[in-house]
Length: 60
Image (cartoon, rainbow, N blue to C red):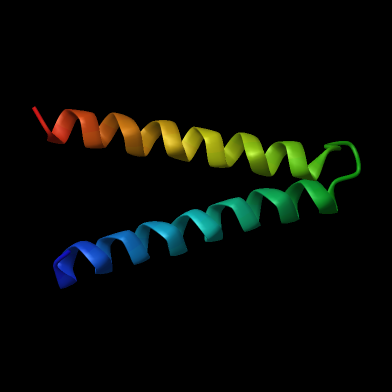
């Protein structure tokens, strides 16, 4: 892998961790929004779907 590819993957991982952390923190702070782990996993799934769609579109 090239250095650019590794840096892009690292940036994607760091951004994903930031977004998931923000969602889990928000759900944790609001008692009405229960199930912080479920919200975090749903966010991870959504991010994975977006990345897969972008990767598929980029390979065409």
